Amino acid sequence: MENAEKEQKKALKEAVSGLKTATEYDTSAVKKALQQLWIDPHGNPSDVKKHGDFLAEHGFGELAVKMKLWYNRQGVFRNQEIWECCDSLLSIIRSCTDRSETFCLKLGEEGYFTLIVADLNHVTYREQYLSSEHVGTVICSNVCALYNCSRLDKLKQKMHDADVVKTMGFYVGSDHKAYKILAVLILAFIMTEKENEQLAAADDIVVGMVAWMKEAVDSASRRVFDGIGWYDAIEIITGLAHLSTNEANKTKIMEADPIPTLRKTIANDQSEDEQIQTIKIVANLAFDKEARVRLRADEELMSQINRLAGGSTFKLANAAKSALWIINDRTEQAVARAEKTAPGKGNGHLMISYNWEDQKTLLKVCEQLKAAGYTVWMDVECRAAPWRPWPRQWKTPPLCSCVHPRSTRTATTAESRRSMPSNCRRPSFR
Image (tube, rainbow, N blue to C red):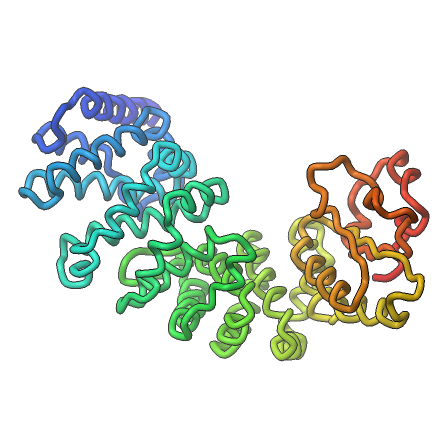
């Protein structure tokens, strides 16, 4: 087994080396080398990841950019030889980006996203991608590779720089549902939280994603085929977690009746990542009052979330507690208590202390308190400054420190605790 793996790596290395010395990329030798470098994306995920990592570590990222530029100059559809070699290159990239983070990062580093965007913006390609098999293959491979890379936070800025957001706008309006959903997912992954709030998806996209989630969760392989490619349940669930930050999407998701699937995923202890992302969906949906009532009314769902909140897995328990905080109206209760004393009558300031994983939730608390007329401070307003209990411009300590329950579990040294005012050491309300 070990010898076979060594021989395989040797063959891959020789294939990459052969491509590096080539000056033209439509020869029989190039075609053979590319066939050696291809791997079945539906094979063992670990093998696909290792394959992608190996190619990235041996310079295939830079080589892919060089080859794609050559095909573009020659004309991808100029002759059968060029097309077959270009098709093989695109297939390798699509397969490796599906599992190898290293491969994705290398493509981003080498500027490959600019080439993808050029293809996706090609006027003729846009006109023919649903009617021409070959053009459709080019667009499909590029959209899938872009989607695979969009899941990495490290590549968000590079995708913004390559103008991916504007480019995906066209495919969001595609007549092909799979392209529409993939385009929305790409945007959901790479847009900032503030931008995501503007990403209201069409009804059929949301309904389609909820249906995909159900199909993937119910499948023994936990995968679903969308007509373009295969997607894991975790991918679809994570995408919905991003989309559910948008207020309009919350309503659309709830109309698609996701609760039975959310309940089933949360109850499945085989995948912690799926559980965490599903709980994020629940938490995001719970910011909508009507959704919150429906979620709270589902006894089995609430039982499962409470079970995880009391579990020993720290990250999962934290996510569950955060969701319960929102579902049980603790955010509104906190604001209501603060509003009992009218602002502007010597009340001082409010400071919010929290666990970083709950930043999104507490930012909403902050906004509601500010809307009620309070002066509120959170550390996001002075990230570049060393930690201090309250802003220097405040002449007196905060009157009330609003502490999210999980933040009390964050490790704090005795020295730093002594430097805090007494009302920061102990939460005034929870």
